[in-house]
Length: 178
Image 1 (cartoon, rainbow, N blue to C red):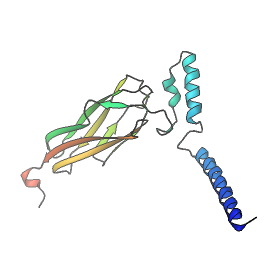
Image 2: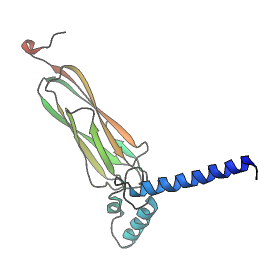
Image 3: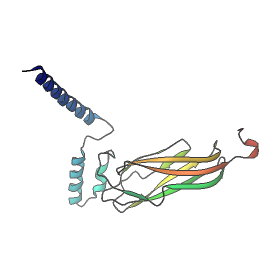
Image 4: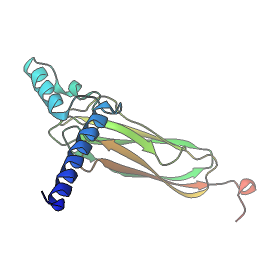
């Protein structure tokens, strides 16, 4: 057997071993349940046949492993207008699951500690609606502010960006030096 063939076989064997090691590592990852997306789909079908909602069967799966759906927001940006420094305000971003699969929001993260989102933890059925509540604390902020909330869900694309804006006015005595 020539050296080229031997090297080729070694590369194939190394690739197969690497793939097996990766699959073993992935299945032991605690962030993702050990059920595969196929098993979850089969479980959902079985629950639906029993008259149960398949929405509950998505528990524990990451957004990447779930069947994809679509989300439609009434608006993805909100401007609070003028605020006084220290004001705490909030806005509800309303959405609809416009797809054919349950919508599972895995995470919502503000761009800084002054922007705190709250989101539904339960799956939203196709056609269902929900709200993302975003609270903004203007303490220590001044002038034009723009903050974002990044949603991670079983949508395509995986992440959706919501934006809030405000102009924070500072009292003349407390205005920072420029």
